[in-house]
Image 1: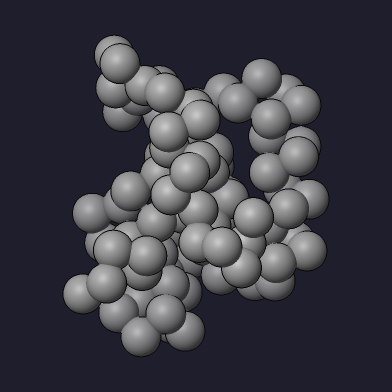
Image 2: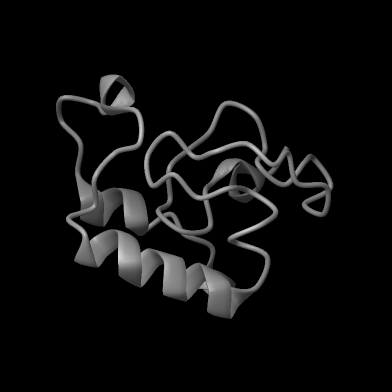
Length: 87
């Protein structure tokens, strides 16, 4: 499976399961443990992704599930994984 199917469109978090399904078109409607976006609802279009990302960053890029945050977390490195069409 292509790695881009595992990446959150908003924050670049690498998920264990593909947020939009293996076909990239069947969202799971789960929440990203990092930015908290609901896959398939708040990230359905590039415009919605950018708006959610702006709000998340403006509010301090807080993790939805802080326990999942790596001790060496690097926001810029993670966001570099965002697929080009959602930047």
